[in-house]
Image (cartoon, rainbow, N blue to C red; front, side):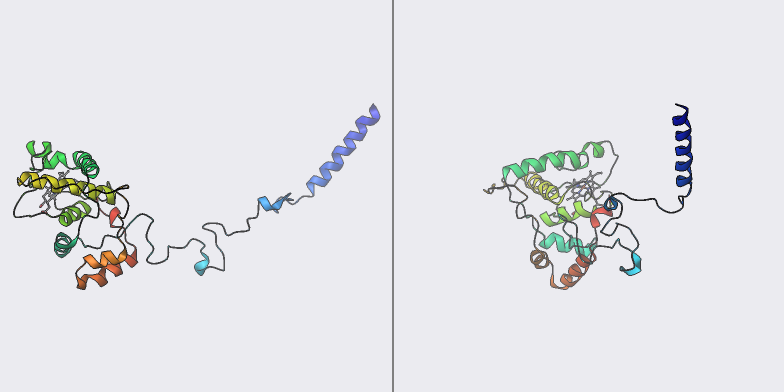
Length: 237
Ligand code: HEC
């Protein structure tokens, strides 16, 4: 028994000597090192192979986020006029689309513009916001294109809805606004189009279509802006 006691003390001392030799500043043995040393480059790592040693790169110039489309009209009087004249609603005018547009309109616009678009929403009645026009205002003569433009950028006291609504949602609202305008003007209801499949199909216009709807002198500008990959969606609220 005593023998075993002394033996284990000697074993402890020996083990202590071995451990004390280890250099604490250098890494220890690695078992299965594959788990520690990555084969690929680490995100945000520094490597000589990259420019500025920086692994993280900006997206290639001209790339745009999936599902997002650059809006080719500028936030200027000319941009507004161009959108007013040329921009058309790509969504079919169906009963479903109109009903969805109505819901969204009621959420986002009716507080100011009123349920029927006469500019007498609850905020107008309480005089919280002034100068809200009716949609049949002859001086403004709104069109599908101008309504979208105003939702995208806002106009004076009216904020932009670009960050709160998607492209599809804005076009849905647009259909409803135009139907309110027709009602206010006493025009007959526009006939519904018959289409199959969801509203989103064929919605995102191709670049060719975008440049087509722009007046010629603006086309170059639009391509330039697209290549900067700007996101106007985020700029305003
Ligand atoms: C906070 C109140 C408010 C809300 C909410 C609001 N608007 Fe407006 N809207 C205004 C005001 C104020 C104007 C007049 C701006 C001006 O001409 O100075 C206006 C103008 C307009 C015009 C006429 C633009 C033109 O061509 O002169 C349209 C179209 C329009 N709004 C659509 C919408 C739609 C669609 C929504 C919902 C997505 C909406 N508005 C939400 C206050 C609002």
